[in-house]
Length: 178
Image (cartoon, rainbow, N blue to C red):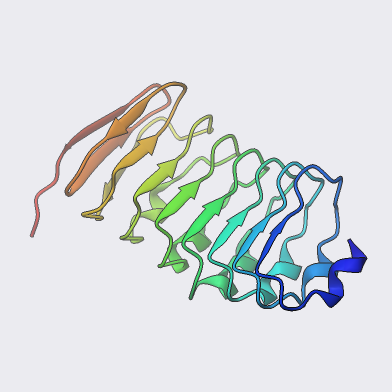
């Protein structure tokens, strides 16, 4: 992908399924607003932290463990696909306050309570996780429309919601608004 270095005006880039392991070649493409590098061999996403105009980022099915470098994308990133990686710590998600769409299916996450303060989610996907036996979270969003957890379970809801999540199901009840 070294030949992409010169395409500095590029706004959208699809590099899915190319056996890519190093993203340094695209680290200077500062005009990218969409990047898809699904189904590759990526472990280190630090090089994309320079792409501060990114709005949509798809890193589906790679070998990513650490997502802390995404904090530099907090001003514009609204859509993030991180399913099928090796991520176990999602504390940084709290800093990505413009996210409205997040998919983290099939990672190694055991605690999703760290997303509690992110208020604008319309979509959350935590299918196939190693969630703690009981995780009680309050999703403060008035705009949450869907949350997925466990195979074939789709919950649609609106308004303040309290979710009791365990390995087998999600139970929602109205949360007090105050």
